Image (cartoon, rainbow, N blue to C red; front, side, top):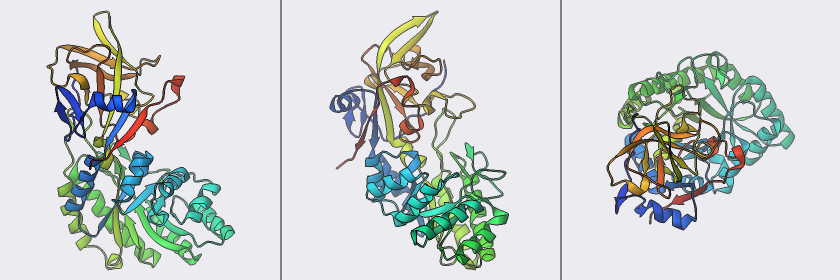
Length: 411
């Protein structure tokens, strides 16, 4: 038997069944008409935003990283709560605009931006986080063709990373950003070319659960921004300190102490260089804001035994929840928090593997876990489904049915 990750707070129990936003899972499925089904409880997202505001210094802005979950209803609702929106493609820039977000409060980061993508974002008024000197040249050329003054920032590849982060975005040779030792010169060049200078973007890592490591990286980023601004000869309007806030996926993970991070960030900002005195600072968060608010519901279709082991086969799987199956870059597969949603009030009676409908042994939502006795028709809940779920999965694989998505907005 293998352990399961911790079920996040904020969910309830009604008549022995999982309740999401105060409604039983089976009632959600009836209202949606089918499974598989993603549910996003916006009440939990609002609570996360409020916790951020309370924990962080008052002058630190909150940006939403749209790549974490680009569901249009969620983006539309978050656009009214956050201070900025960060895109990783022209498609996300357009989604921000279509969802009521202000392109002037949006930024676009990512390597290999095509000329048409640069032109499209510049025409919308989105700030471009430049990833290289050649990208700067192409952005300036695109703006010249459009007769538009581009809004340009420099994404910096810092000489440090967030220690222990699940995905390291800085600290060595990277496809992301301009190496710190060249970033100041590039900023001088784009400012001299007449661009509207938007500042620095320093993203050192993601999915970190050690508050001290996150705080150390943020302090280093603040200091680096001061040094680079001196080299550039211009104060940055904005310093985006990146994100990195993780959530607990597996049994040994512990929640991130964001209040400790906020206290340390306040100290770093109080000691910042004079050239940053009038700069705004922002944190770019995705997973931490929305990940724990999402639940993926799938229905058990078959119950079978094979050579002494029990399998519960469902109509949903890795084509919707690649990360939960351990196939989104995880080195060691660990079980996400999973439960039999329609039997949450029952004790565990058997050990089963919960698998999907795909013809691959990789399609395993939970591996040899203790569950109540479950049968066809029962619903399985996969938690932490609010970030890097559907759009980070191979939805077209084997032409399976699409998942339904719903945003639950409490009164």
